Image (cartoon, rainbow, N blue to C red; front, side, top):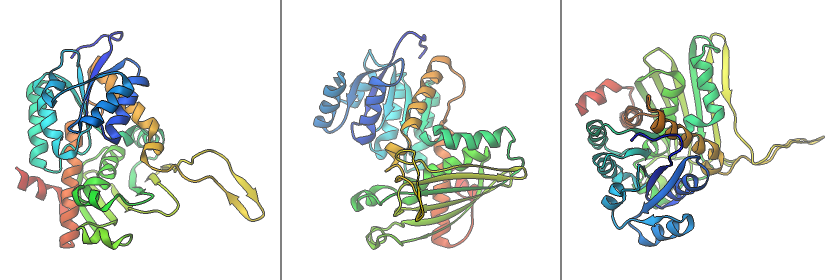
Length: 345
């Protein structure tokens, strides 16, 4: 679509769960120049509740939502297994698309969706919101601008405050595709270089039930990039002290690093030592600003054109890396990305 700076970009929000509701609220109330025309969810009550809260319509079907005359763009926030069907429908309707990650757990399905987007010539941005976190972005900017010199190592720590329900674990696609996927994207984003090799180790250290469900809850991944940089990723489903999110780039001139954010900024210092407030509870709190900045980027992309802030290829690459990571862990060996790509093609 082509939109002037004074014409609102009208959205259909697909999916009215936790993420869809958050995006509907932002687009309705906090993203300048955005409006929500209609929402859709397979659970009628969920769609009705969101529509009532934000004063928009409810579509009877996915097709009705994406083909509505008062819709310019679509926000895909449905369950992962429905993302590609929604993407194809929106593309065929000529609507620009924002799609939450992952696009799909199937690389073949991702390719089907991206082919539809390319054929239709619509815009697509993938929801890797952590790219827009001011602290992480500052690390990536320092690398891009040469402040840390020749980059040698990138270290990414991502530890959740607690694991999700076991029922979610069973359908999540596994830790690498559900949790580490953000870190795979961050590695490419910070280094500016593609991953060529993956070596992953995983364990069940938090909850035996996670292992019984066929997944892991603790992982370390070593990525080798095309430019020679090594990235380590350290994941846990439970950090007793809170949501731990840090990124460091180390190079010949020094390092750039992002630190955790706390619920408020204060320090109590006594003879017993220093006491700080708890870390932000989880991703909705920790990354609140990044979600808004992500939408600002999408709005500019739709209005002004240029490259997508997070392309379909950016959405595909972490899934390929995750596939390689799972194979590496299972077979206890480094796996070349070319090996996985060759099998797909």
